[in-house]
Amino acid sequence: MIALRKHHMAVNGSLDRRAFDRRLFAAAAVLFPLIILAGFGRTYYLKGFFDTPPLASMLVHLHGIFMSAWVVLFILQVWLVSARRIQVHQRLGFAAIGLGILVIVVGFFTAVRAAKFGSTSAPPDGIPPLAFLIVPLTDLVIFAILFSAAIYFRKKSAEHKRLMLLTAINFLPPAIARIPVPSLQALGPLWFFGLPAALALIALGVDSWRNKKLNKIFLAGILLLISSFVVRLALMGTNAWMRIAVWLTTWAA
Image (cartoon, rainbow, N blue to C red; front, side, top):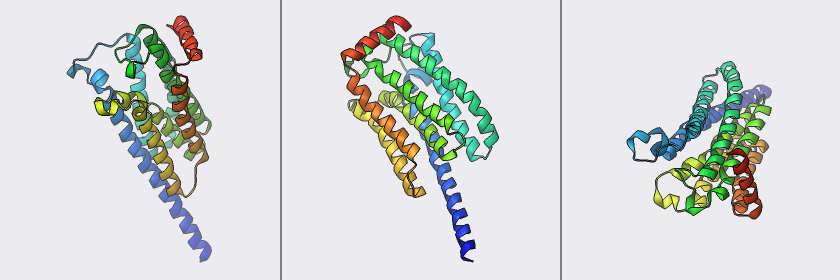
């Protein structure tokens, strides 16, 4: 009887954890597109309703298409797991790899071109475009690391899901920085880096409390993400970075 009771408790605990995971990722699948829409609605998705400058080039439009496709893919993959259509989720993962490569390549050239020729969405606080280039490029580097790790851990559901969640959080700062609330925009990095960091730490805390253990891969990914915020701000105005930025814009733009 004791063994049977322990077995039932273990099964119930596993079901509770799965239910929690579904709620967590369902919330992320709702919050992610809402933040993206709030940030880029005026300048991209709902552009026809606002008097905003035209897109700088077709490259910017391609970047918007691929990033939008990534948001849609994230939502779809969450739904497939929730609907227990795991095989479809896994097959779609191969398409996600191809899309991830396009996001990185097109995002790189879009960022470099904006740093060289300017952009309709200027860097905040009058930061020189070449200095600001480190911000979007670091986004792409962190995305590549997190997404590669998620692929590596694809057979370990807990780690895979949490790393994919971090790829979404990693792409939030550009949208958050563009949310048209002057009092929030005035906060600068404290706002557009602070909110994603807070969301990641809250997710880690709730996840650890609910599952009664710390997922070390999740923690490592969050530390990487938050440390990247600090590093890019520290290096942004240095002579070393400016030399790299000049070289990149000479070579790639």
